[in-house]
Amino acid sequence: MTALRSLFCLVALSAFAAPDTAPFPQPPDIKGIQVQMTDDALALGLHHATINVSLGMLMDLGKKPGNPRWTCEGEEFSFNEGYAGALDRQVKPLSDAGILVYAIILAYPTKDKAKDGILVHPKARADGKYNIAAFNTATPEGARWYRAVVEFLADRWSGANAAAHGRMWGWIIGNEVNSHWLWYNMGNASLEEVASEHEKAVRIAHEAVRKATASGRVYVSFDHHWRISMGGISAQEATPGRDFLDAFARIAKQRGDFDWNVAHHPYPEDLGNPRVWADKTVTFDDNTPKVTFKNLEVLCRHLEKPELLYQGKPRRIILSEQGFHTLAIPDGETIQAAAYAYAWEKCRRLPLIDAFIYHRHVDHSQEGGLRLGLWRNAPGSIADPVKKKQIYDLFKKAGTPEWDEAAKFALPVAGLKSWDELAPK
Image 1: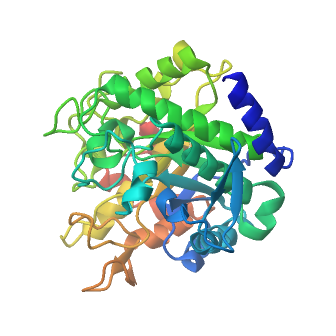
Image 2: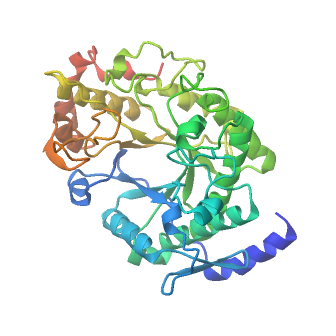
């Protein structure tokens, strides 16, 4: 950090109180969901939840009167209070109930040319045909805005401000960044380029979060590809997750290591087949093509390598997005529920796993035909809940004394005699 930037950061710190020193919470279990219906989520007995946060929706380039301001690196920024307030209404009921809330920080394109010029990485494909972009850490203006918005959010949802707005503890920076063409678009770019730019984004977020809270955690997000890339696209569009993870760790150490963690998505090898126990292509060594629930210990072991440790300890893992499809067959709901039981029991045997955050709450009609929810959606709707599935009651009992009895139906479905067969291999 240059002397000039250090001076600017000291000026920016005048907006902060001293960092909140509360330790990172230790919930009683790993149960979580990507929340759609708050009241239902509370009834399910959650301890973890994720909320998507669109940085573009927060940005107010026109500095509308009444919107909150934030000073960062000597510059004043303005943010959309309407959107921030809507996030408050999602976060506060959850955090007030003792649920750990994780923000998924995303650069959705806004179609506003001026805003996207600041928000979106300049290497993102020019035609704008992507769902989520890489953060613009390549230009001074983009990096300043990005730092300012994360500082604003961390301050709003930490420490004393949590009483009014709710509390965030985790910050997932981007989505499935190893498959960047689809989920973190930086155009055609090499692994080294994407890892380097994303390291900047995660580092900035870590610095911003730690100004507000001494224990807030940041996470790097990966899909289930491990030693292979997503099929059908080039090496300039997707990379193996293991290679990206190792490159990210190496770059972070070269620039000065910091406390980053992992948000992994261990979907079955075939997203349309919930029978994760039958995954055929996965192995239990570090060269497995994919890391799913069946071989999740591979990721845990990899993070125990000396070059990946932080202060002598492995990075923590959350499973921040994964679910099981409901097949359109008579026992489709039973197989989906059995897959959840299998995954829960696998996670219980892996101490690095802090959270298992299920996706989705309700089936979504625009998810490529997948029906992952605890609820079915109403015919003709996108995600209006109409009927609970078999998985719903099982999910509710996870982490309770009723679990063992509720889950035992799944053993023969998964071809097991005992859950102890899921001990790490």
